[in-house]
Image 1: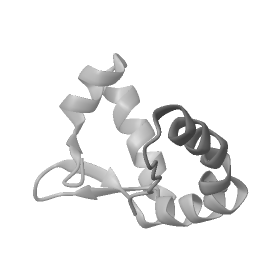
Image 2: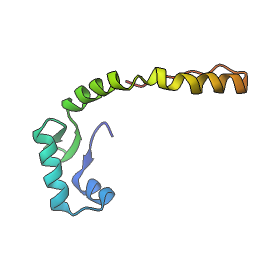
Image 3: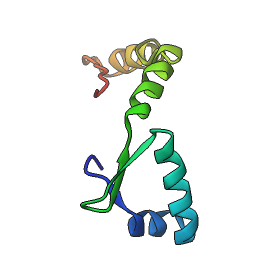
Length: 87
């Protein structure tokens, strides 16, 4: 979620204990991977995630990876097939 997720929500989704989730979140925040909004209490992705994604994107050229599947889809359906990456 762009607005972030609460600690309680993350505990519920993960099945981990509240102290464990809080410790993990705090550690990730210390590295810039997460940000904590003290006004709302929500946790969201941090700026370092963008950097990691940029580095990963160079290693995984999704356009090239998807091209064979798109061509096969277009050939089998007789329709145009498009690939896009939301940024």
